[in-house]
Amino acid sequence: MCIPVSSVACERGFSLQNRIKVKSRTSLNPENLENLMKISAGPGLDSFPYNRAIKHWRTQKKRRLARLYQPSVSKDNK
Image 1 (cartoon, rainbow, N blue to C red):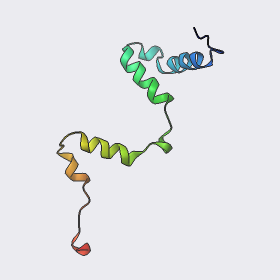
Image 2 (cartoon, one colour):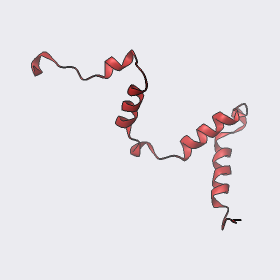
Image 3 (spheres, one colour):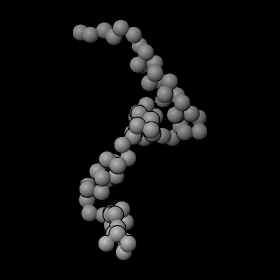
Image 4 (cartoon, rainbow, N blue to C red):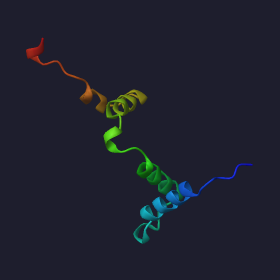
């Protein structure tokens, strides 16, 4: 059996939940609340790997919009 030394992580989670689920958002289902909490508790935007995320998104399946993100060769670069 393991007893936590402090309840800081638990308290931080409840605080985050209370900031997200305010009276105007009482109809949030548990799954959406959990996802919003993960986003809020995650790393900041400055450390998000945008290029890796876009590459991952593009390779998941064949997408019509993927052609728009392909680097194009202009007539000047030929």
